[in-house]
Length: 113
Ligand SMILES: [Zn+2]
Figure: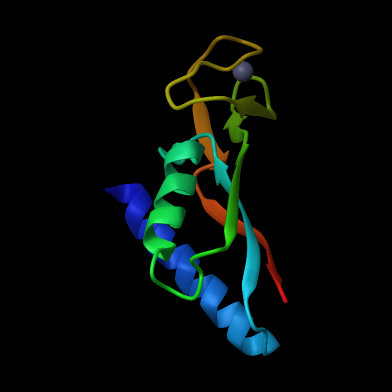
């Protein structure tokens, strides 16, 4: 499952951040996934909780936000927002789009104590 491998990556990033900060515990990890990333925020959150079980991150709160996708529309000559893959340009209805954002996952912040 794609989300589970992402979740494991998130846990490693959080563990490293906690170590570097000399923290006791990671209390919260805030993530953002792009609308075009083929990752469901709910599923990613669940997978993080699942992957954290039995680890020092067991009681960490995970939140996942979704950020809109973005693409460059050649006919419009501008960047447009996309909510999903395969969507037409909201301005001209065309498909001459080059995806420029919203395909990735980001760790927004990691709270430690
Ligand atoms: Zn357009």
